[in-house]
Image (tube, rainbow, N blue to C red; front, side, top):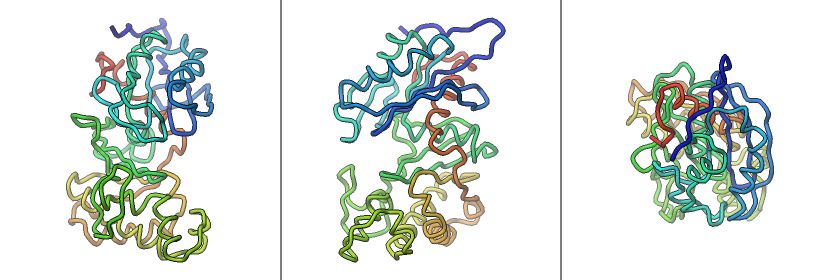
Length: 307
């Protein structure tokens, strides 16, 4: 049973926010304006120790929080369980994160995918805060995304809405995606995909930043495919703005200029006018978004089940 929220008289409620990633776990306290305080982090352990580490990191913050929001890698089902996850989090699939958090921390808890959490942050307190409908795209080791309407993430019936990295790329190269399918855009425009393409084309193994410094055509090719996929997504949902986040976006104009050119060439007149904006909240977006999502349930008087 979900515990009731804690409300201290005369105090603005805070959310205990947690961000669970493949290499680090972070926790902090988030206010309704997106302010983050008491930021703590530690390395992500293997499999069964993940939740134990989360709770150890979060316990010192519990007494100051009214609710808990958890953003995590993997697909999160409507009950707050991990429906599927990659090998970055061994044994994570099937974990009842919401149930375990509510039993251990005694706070009503919202659990959502980490890209959804980052999208919520950018939509409510970041680059897309003035947009009614926003598409937030995170380009890193993989490619994830979030569709946000009036500041709220639309997760879909199974929790996979916004998975732009698994849209088909306009190519028949036959490259295998991390999900097992062929030629999804993640297999062509993620950081590892660009590094792989450079290695195959030149015989040299270089990190992404060095490839960007050299200005290789593999970046242009990846960016063009990504821009065309973004155009298809924008033609479908007609967003006010598109926000680009993630480590690969740090390539700057080498990635963003050909991506935007391809986007403008294939969008309909309405979506073509949507600005493509850099993310504003950086590495803290997942924490801020998880906290804001939890607080939004508290404000609306709703349960902290996924929606």
